[in-house]
Length: 330
Image 1 (cartoon, rainbow, N blue to C red):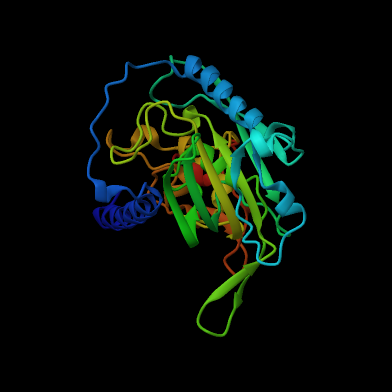
Image 2 (cartoon, rainbow, N blue to C red):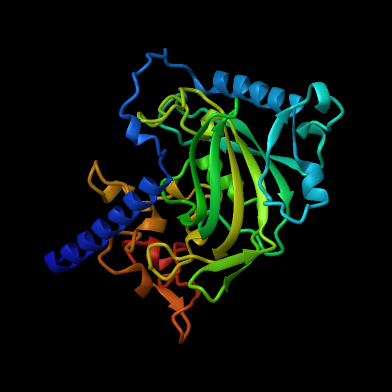
């Protein structure tokens, strides 16, 4: 690779790293004012055993709690469409538990790439539960899309640890915990933005939901140091999904990010074609790499685009079954 090409690529990567850090900074817990919490030493545990305990703990919550489904079914005039949880007891003894609500669904997500808490080659199935209290009128994003949303993160006991109560832009594969990203993509967006005439915008008919995340799809044994989240803690996120950018191309290489999930496992961050040629301290998965095969030719020059610069398809010039942008000996 020529020095000029290397310099240009490094500058591009540094810009992408900076963008990643901004996204992660917005996402990370907002308890920094409290300073570092006293570290608690927790013996290391395997993800396989914790996954069973997490599922049991989440199931217990779903069986003993309800949400304000009656307000969602018949919204009062001033209803804010915010999910509220409470315990089924006393005056609420006749409420329907979350586990019995038809709005609750689940998906099994296989973890086979975690670098800690997992034996070599071990595949661990986690159950991710998501509640769609209000289905938005729009489509659902993918893990490769930019979204506009509001969120609140809490522990199972209701203690909040993070949140954003105004519309926020997030890239779902940009440094967020996996359970969060895979949960948001199950919700439906609304319509907007709508100009309000006063410099602000609003959204209508947006989706509202909650995600119940086992620690193996969260922070597992390594929560943020400045957070109240403990090791092996299941998490809840309440989400209002306003809009998303369909077929987001995060790295600007001409390929929609979702198409760079080469193994189709719903995780863009473990697909890195040129990992063997990158320095040991560098890891740029394909959705964050403008030269996916490290051959010195930008990916955007090795794919098919239409006259407007939109992605059309892949090329295999030498007919070896490997697309040009992934084939460094093409």
